[in-house]
Amino acid sequence: MLFVCYPKCSTCQKARAFLEERGAAYTLRDIKTENPTAEELRRWWKMSGLPLKRFFNTSGLQYKALGLKDRLPEMDEQAQLELLATDGMLVKRPILVGEDFVLVGFRAAEWEQRLG
Image 1 (cartoon, rainbow, N blue to C red):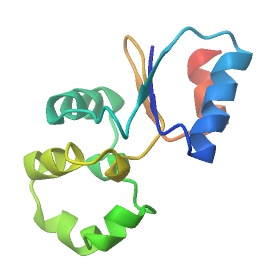
Image 2 (image 1 turned 90 degrees about the vertical axis):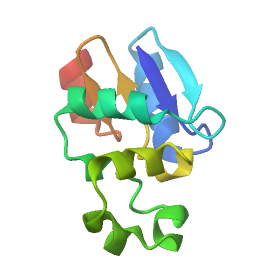
Image 3 (image 1 turned 30 degrees about the horizontal axis):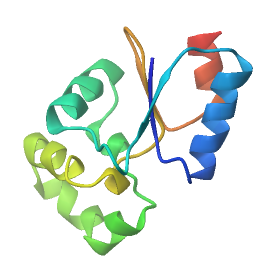
């Protein structure tokens, strides 16, 4: 599995501890130093079945500074994916990418259901 996170984020730290406690094998990727590409984000979005807006870190400083609450509805999907690919701090984290699933954000019950 691929675990995409920001190591200083407390939620990401909780998610990592969750994975460690279960002995889950994963590759860690720092979203700030190795931001996902637009193509990766498109693939993950399609696998997740979630609305694209769920991939935005809506509580982040960048999201607010760019006024995305008002701008996103006017942007098409490709423009949103390209914007997400410009800065890892815009992306909701953590993201856990498995063979046939993508989890966005950390909700222990959802991760438990998926990982067992």
